[in-house]
Length: 431
Ligand SMILES: [Zn+2]
Image (cartoon, rainbow, N blue to C red):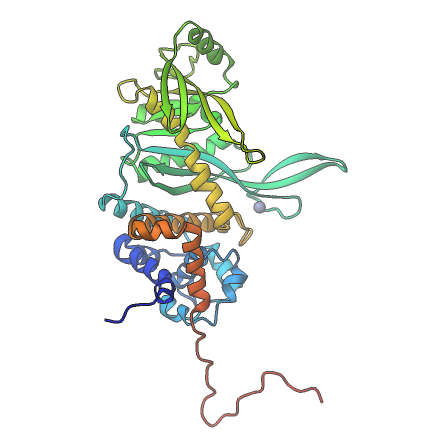
């Protein structure tokens, strides 16, 4: 058997990724079941949805960049049709049903779960992380669903328009999945949008997570009182927006000796107390955990080792028996996963914040598609590539190979003029 050369193998990475998604995640069937709101579509919805997924997998960053790959023969295989124009892709994307995309997310989750690809962390608790994300802000373009705020500039007050959505992400042992998003509507706060998102997360993923993690904004009675009776614990950062609870906790901690521990490379001194009554709006047992952390970094400038310190406080409904102090500290820091493998990766590497089409529905469709492609890509990278291949190629490198394969796909043969007819010259000479 001839040895396949390196370039041959790297050339096949997009095909391999799509084959993994088809056979292991049932992805193609899911994508092809998505509908859109057009009455008499000329181009079938799967063509649009499939084209957009490859735009994200190859991280092309814009519909125009996607449009420029139109001559590639890859499209005939993947779409069984020609690639639609950038304008058509954007227009139809705005009509794609978001619940259809959510069903594909649910299906990818279910297949990974069934395949035992989603193990819990050592402490046994899989977390659902909610967090708000501002996708873009502008002084010029705005739409009815956009949020607005007044910005004080040197030239006076100006109205800025922006969009924010709240995302829901699962965090397990060595994996994360960004599964859903909900847009914040004009006139409402982020927590109101998060409650709609959580209601759907409980319906679509009832047994997928044990505890909801969130930042200080979500240390809100509405969140605690919604989740706790539904069997989900909450863990939120405790900040000075709860002065009474914070003061109560600090004074109690003063008279309690800390417990030493370690979280990764950090040394922790922890305080952990239950039974707080200084937050009467919450109908759940309240526990506060404080972690004073110390670690060292080597300064790049002169190579000196420098000690770093941080203080963290969390408020949670988690019972001690379910989550010992160390587990609470680990969960508290797991929230960073949504920054590092959620928003940051989506925004900086996947161009998820690019405004592909400025319409409320299109913004959500593109966000859900970007999240779906991130999940499929990460599942492929972590569960299908061999450890040696992962060690040799970072995620970014593999992503560049995906784009490279698309660009290197041969150009489809130029259509021939029917026999008996003269081919029209492309440029008409000026007389
Ligand atoms: Zn807008």
